[in-house]
Image 1 (cartoon, rainbow, N blue to C red):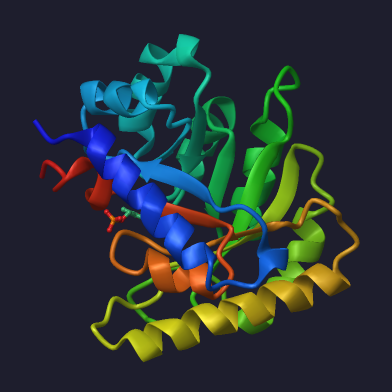
Image 2 (spheres, rainbow, N blue to C red; image 1 turned 180 degrees about the vertical axis):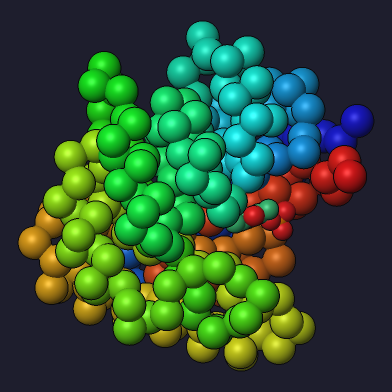
Length: 230
Ligand SMILES: *Cc1c(COP(=O)(O)O)cnc(C)c1O
């Protein structure tokens, strides 16, 4: 069994180190521990050392975990593509969705958000490198969708998410994150919502660069939990 406590401590020190190189207005960085394809025991081990935010990609798998860990009051982030027939389950169980890229899905999430829960926090997913293999909006489409999503009663528009192309060229990665930050700032100036405060970018391999470029949330899986089960 992997020493999750030591790994989380190491990630926290990477976050701190990278934060010394970022512009201070970006604020504190939230660590989302990506627990997809990881066991409930691994999530419990992370909880024991104070980890509160967890990310999942597969609805059915996630719902089982959320229900079993209900009494721990964790904060659950949905990161994967959403099929419209799964939107209701996502709306009923999660606190955040990072992967909004269509109005139809946003409307379904809003319509299915139970009145007993606070509005669902959402980020728009941006395909910042125009990668044909990835979902997400083109940068030029974001303002229009953001303005509509901001008005949906069951949602709270929080920011943007990106998943840049994985490359060993760190300057290319940095350029993608920098473009995201600029897009985020442009939208923040233009949107009439005060809740637009989150820039979700950076994973195990590139979180340091993402933080230096202004990420407010990083989503880290394998660096905390080890390789995922197939
Ligand atoms: C799986 C996943 C992650 C975590 O990736 P790691 O490389 O394991 O850190 C982060 N974000 C999204 C959207 C993911 O699907």
